[in-house]
Image (cartoon, rainbow, N blue to C red; front, side, top):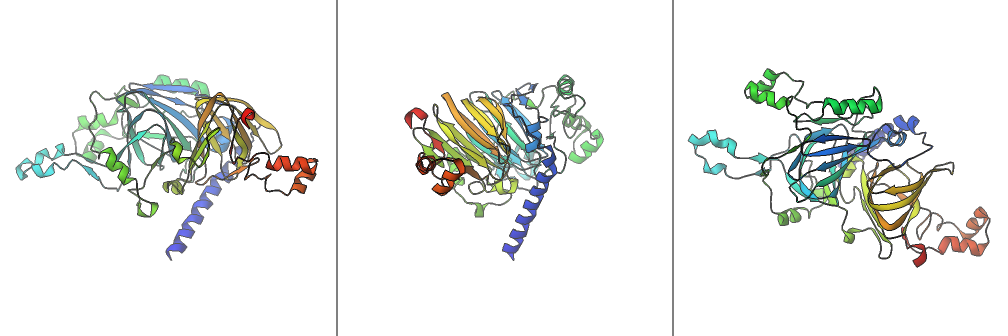
Length: 450
């Protein structure tokens, strides 16, 4: 019975995902793709956020958007939730974050409550309890469900840079294709910033809205709901808060959290032990020892999917991390079941993307800090520049399947020699070279070292 219910649930999830894809297919008239840079910036007291214009054709086709947070030391990204699931990649720095899920227990507590007598119950508010918090570092991917509030605090020794990938066409989002952020505190935008975006996009809706979710609620009703005075309720609304969506903590924020070594021990569990509240949401993709494909002379490639991070099955998303050495080539390939958004984290690469008509819709350089969308089934090839190339990819499927055109496990390698010879009008010897000349699987040595 359990297996039947699980199968039915999986079918309904896939049906919903398929409906979202069908719904947006009319927008996928992509004849030209560009390497994109941020379109506008929203600045705050403790940092800034750079937005890519999600109204560009390739973003609308894939149903995705992306933004980049740059958070200063002791900067706090205020609690926020989104209308779609997101994947966060840590480009630089380290910090602490929390994901808040209603109904889950406050499992982190100070344990000082026993020190108070009955007469001292008024001091109970000194005892802090909160949901689980975790540390993160460069290379971590964090998966966050639609509607789950989360916050980020930079307690590191340098600027914190994270990119946030939104899957707007995900089955979990029943609104429109616009990414929507619902802040729980502060006053995340300004009239000048909103006007800047409206000039960019005409009369279309701005991504950066004014106010938090309490701003539109009546002060007296808020006071009753929280059992506080009206002045405190007025502060919840944040209308006179000019600090923006990333604030600067005057003092270091005190958090209840276990020692890092204990956190490492807690990671050693599998998906069967996870519950909705304790589900693991983070995985590091930067460790070379974690690579799925490794060529010491050419680079490495690591994938993150629902098999190694089970929560991705719920989000219907996956990610990957690639590193190419100087002039190395990432095999020509296509994703059979996912759109892909590539964010360049270091260096540069020549990239070519080809559509179903055999036309190159992109043939250019992708540089650090730029974004490139590769639609489902479009063929793509990368060759690193002299300084090498590194990237993180976000995929719109929990187990994005990659098919290669060259290499030991490629589609061409699987064809009979005589089929290759006749298909390409070459001799049998030339067909054998086409099939067998590349012995690598996915990452090829630079031409001069092949």
